[in-house]
Image (cartoon, rainbow, N blue to C red):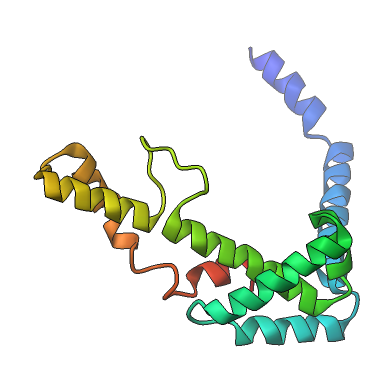
Length: 173
């Protein structure tokens, strides 16, 4: 067994493989940095997008969400699909911001209202869970496993969402 370990180490951990791994690491880092820096087309586009993202930080803004959703729908009608929008958004910081805020508003909506198709055995969304807890309280089933699991797993998270910028900073800016 020790001979096998020695031969395996000799094959995998030699000077040639170390040089290849170092070259790959440096090239992949350069590609990653290049793609992140040059995804805006110019530094002015990046500065414009950064200013819009910083201005939108803070509590969830329903008015901004409606504006961004309308702009996203208009771009979807114009360019056909999300791939076309992503390609154009690389050049247009306003469209890039609208797409990002549309995604954020969709996340916030799913957080509060749950997904479009709701599994009744595994509820998601604050409002459906609150409704289910109200039904359980009306039935007097506050000692049930379902009610206690809602209290433990969901009640601490109710303060997040529309009154917090946590999701915005994690997903966008």
